[in-house]
Amino acid sequence: MTPEPLSLLAFAILIVAFLYSCVGHAGASGYIAAMSLFSLAPADIKPTALVLNILVAGIGSWHFWRAGHFSWKLFWPFAVLAIPMAFAGGYLSLPTHVFKVLAGIVLWFSALRFLLQPSDDTLKGEPSRPVALGIGAGLGLLAGLTGTGGGIFLTPLLLCMRWARTKNAAAVSALFILVNSVAGLLGNLSSTKHFPSFAIALAVAAAIGGTAGSYFGSRRFNHTGIKRLLAGVMLIAGTKLMFIP
Image (cartoon, rainbow, N blue to C red):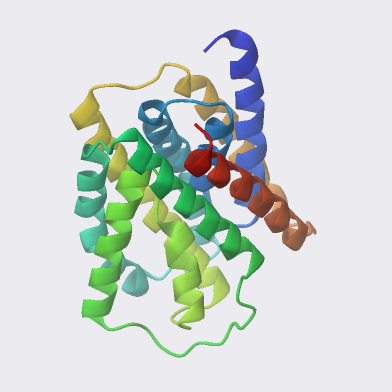
């Protein structure tokens, strides 16, 4: 990439990381949306999104753990099979048109996730081990294939099924995103031996945005407005991926 579009993309990544971390997410779907709008190749989008995800998810995991919201008992059944499946998904290289359709569906689902977030915060109980293991394996594979961490699917599932309260779900999802993103990146690098050099500049931007967002997200931000803005961007990017060459 030439310096000018790279600067614009880095600024977009910084904003995405800031907004996502404000609402407790790492931002992979937003990074994919931003890079798609800049017409980057899927071979560059996937490893870059995973690196950015690792940085911001790591920051979020630390904050949630320090705040006492993390539950190892809830986390490990989802993660134990998700990690090797994320590695496998990262290792596989999908055809460009398949990647675009799958990533577009993820973006649309993510947009709906922000627009239709459950408001009920009651707790019904934790899932059975076989159910959690199966769901984790599926989400890990999807995370590796698309360059996301899987948290955008795990969080609403935990809330809709009333397996966790909002802050506990966010804490578990943050670490779930982190471990899946690490595994997916290792799988991708093992397969392609390719890592885009411009990702370093984007990583710096994501780290700055993620750190600031994690701090200010605990203040008096209007999370509903931020989520609607993110949803709009993801709907546009998902449509571009699936229907515009």
